[in-house]
Amino acid sequence: MQPWKGLSIGALISIALVGCNNDDAQQQVRVGSGVSLDPASIDWEVQGSYDADGNCLINPGHYNDTYLTARVVNEEGAPLGGIDLRVTADLTGNSYTGFHVIQVYSDANGNGVADPSELVLGPGMPAYDTRTGRYTGEINLIARVNLSCTFKGNIFVAGTPGGAATSVSVTAEPPPDATEEPIDPVTGTEDPGAGTDTEGEADPATGAEGETDGV
Image (cartoon, rainbow, N blue to C red; front, side, top):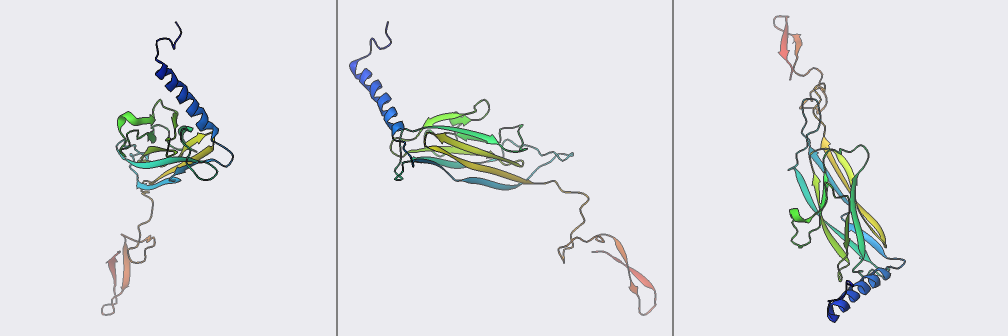
């Protein structure tokens, strides 16, 4: 039996129109068309948590959600709807790789909340294929960035018109160094003598040297 037998004439026409509309959308992509992804960067400086050996500790519940908008326009800046895009994310350099510190949600229902069912990039999800809105030429995403430890990465959006990326950077303050000299509260500089006893000047009455406590 042929796969289309049993379908109504209206259903067959709808299937044909969807295919044609998608092909037409891809053909709209001409020289000068482009892809953008906003914001261009997500940067955080945080207070890290460390174990006794100085290893940074990941807290899965410590994160921030940032709204992203990918947009495809033609050479005149008009939005292009129905354009196929692929979304990926990766870490760079020696960034921490033991936990998915970047996850991406699709926000399919448009409520601005990263619902669990909308997770599209995460464990076992290396890429997300989608298409720009018919009239807006946009896709909306939510980037969930873990704020526990230092890492750098990127979120990429690519398609026929080209590609764009949002850089992601989290910098966690290093653990305190027990060998660091204390800071003089008056001068703001290191005070090697802080917390130690120092010899005072001779008492003008007795001629004996006294001792004073360091600051």
